[in-house]
Image (cartoon, rainbow, N blue to C red):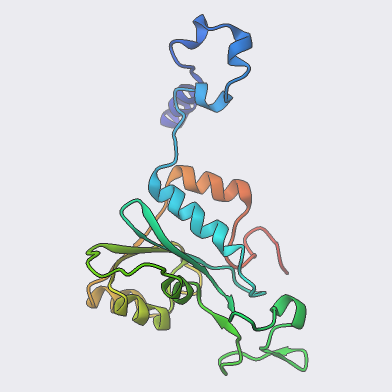
Length: 208
């Protein structure tokens, strides 16, 4: 409790030059940047934000997934889950897995392609010679995507949420030389909570 109170007190403190600056000038500035505790997002935060915002492009009615492939600080490709190019939009035509009003799972009826596969397919430049190709995906990858991640030579996978993790996928990736790590930061967590992002729309009651 004492540490939390100290952190809050520090966040409320202003920069040393602020008291000597004309208040009308200060009024034109970003208020949060005047606080001692202000932190800018780092590049991983920006990549994570890109993946989350990309996930909102998903056409799936049940899951929103975004993936970003990057090398160093450079984003190479993005992808989201949804129906193949030229296929119908599930929002307009209905989910293909709903038959006679019932959801049929595990029979291959889904029109969607996963975000990780789309990100790999959307790479416009060759990746030969890139020795540290990375991917950030919103929920943990599935086994089918993990195989293509390995084939593409991606060496690091970061994920934000645990939803839908299939048993043994992390171990499979690690066995084949791909590191797997959940990424989080105080900045990112605040941003996600503020925008009410969630990959299955359940955390904030966005769906029944």
